[in-house]
Amino acid sequence: MSNRSEVAMLYNDRAVLENHHASASLRLMNDEDFNIISSLKPAEYRYIQQSVSPLITYNKRTCYNNIHLRLG
Image (cartoon, rainbow, N blue to C red; front, side):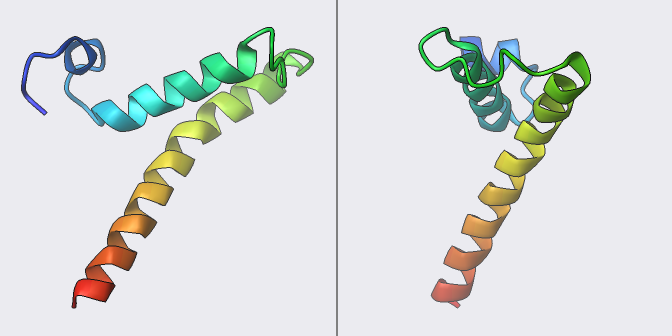
């Protein structure tokens, strides 16, 4: 995604959308209106933080593979 967009520059042009979605997910989970991870211990929060990006990447690959299989 070498288009010099703000988001691409923010994530150093590496897995830009995945990193953006992971960041947005964590921000939402921390938002005071949702507040679903505020009571976690630091180790638990770190586990969630480290799990979000791989889950997004896995989902992307799964969707891509499903589309690829359908198209033959």
